[in-house]
Image 1 (cartoon, rainbow, N blue to C red):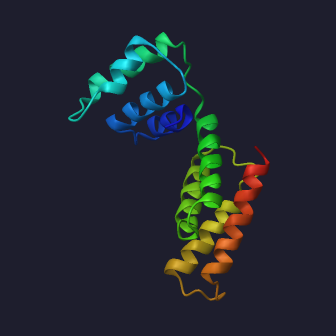
Image 2 (tube, rainbow, N blue to C red):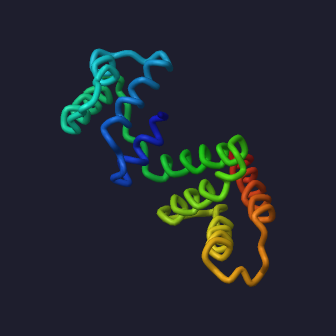
Length: 155
């Protein structure tokens, strides 16, 4: 797990103890090393959230890592979701697009991301509405993929 995604989950209050352990394992794979990082990566179930978070704070100090801003984490998460839309099964594109919309909704400024609001409306209409516009799944996915490519180009 990438650091900005972990912090996004922390900001959202949606972080689980195993997220920290997965992050630690990812950090080790990327050639980061510290005493507490090694301990955090070796913790196993059942995990105590207080112990896990204590080791996480220690790792941040030991590696001199700063907490990124929420907006930075959200932008990074949107980028990763957009990449997943292009590289995963098309059936997941609708769910991933809705996740992007949820992240965009949380941002104070969603400059360049306004189209995700429209896509969320299209998704809701397709899934739950009368589908008055007769939107097909293929057309919806084409729209989602097109917007995901725009996000990646802005990188």
